[in-house]
Image 1: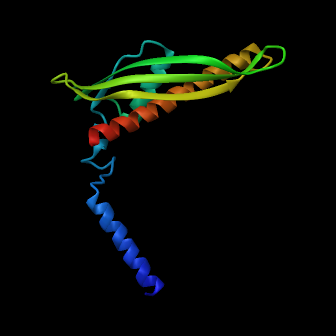
Image 2: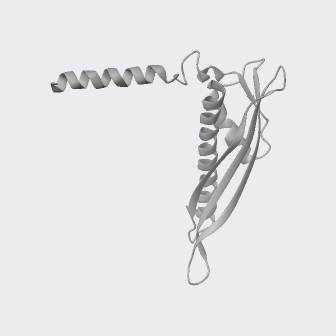
Image 3: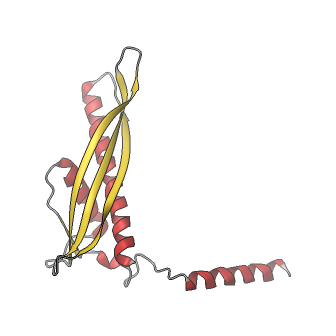
Amino acid sequence: MRWSGRRSFLIGLAAAGLAGCGLRPVYAPSGAGALAGRVAVTVPENRESFLLVTRLRDRLGAPASAPDYRLDFDVSTRASGLAVTQEQSTTRYQIIGTVRYALRDTATGAESASGTVTGFTGYSTTGSTVATLAAERDARERLMTLLADDLTAQLLAQVGA
C-alpha cells in the first residue's frame, strides 16, 4: 500500500472512530456552550470571591434577566511556607485554593452539576513589605483565575454530557 493510500485510510479510520464516540463540541450552539448568559453567580462576599465571580462572568457571560441556573459556591484558601532560610525566614509561599460548587436549576431547584476544584500558586517574599504584599495579592488573583477556569471547564463538561 502506498503512503498516500495508507494515510487516507488512517484518516478515514480516525474520522469514523470520532463519529461513533459521541464527541460534541463544547462551544457549539447545541453544546454546553449554551450556558453562556444562562447562569447567575452567587454575590461575592470578599475580594477572592469577587475575583472568582468576575472571571466566571467573563467565561460564562453576564446573566440574563431570568437566568436558567444559579451557581452557588464556597471559596477557601490557605497559605503555607515552602522555602525557609538558615535564619528561619520564609522566602517562598504557596497558596492552595478550593472551590466547592453546585449549579442549580432556578425553576425547580434541582442540582444540575456539583463538585470541587482545587489549585495552587506561589509567590516569593522580598526584603520589602510592599513588594511582598503585592506578590501575595497577585498570586491570589492568579489562583482565582485558575479556579474559575477549571470550574467553567467542569460545568461545561457536566452540563453538556
